[in-house]
Length: 123
Image (cartoon, rainbow, N blue to C red; front, top):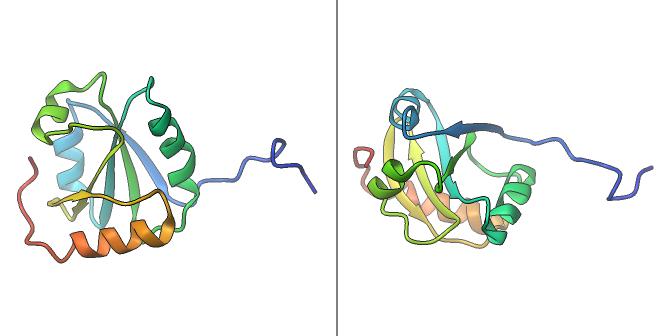
């Protein structure tokens, strides 16, 4: 048995780091549901999201992280105004922003709602 400070739970989803240079290519090529998350090193909520999201049982295939501070082009295209910012992409199609607390039930519901929207091209 270990104390919470001694144990690190393994991630239950695949994680990818995307940049201005490869975000579009990779998102277009990836099958399944991707949750795209814009974060920044100096953002406390972003650090919490980085730690929390991989541990949740989400109905997605992967988490795609984008450092907003280093990738201004993709931040501008996605019109990111606050951090963390979450978006849904499925099979290379854009389904828009997700607004939910970092809770498995709420996020899964928000992703499901997003997937009912009309798909668009990636920004």
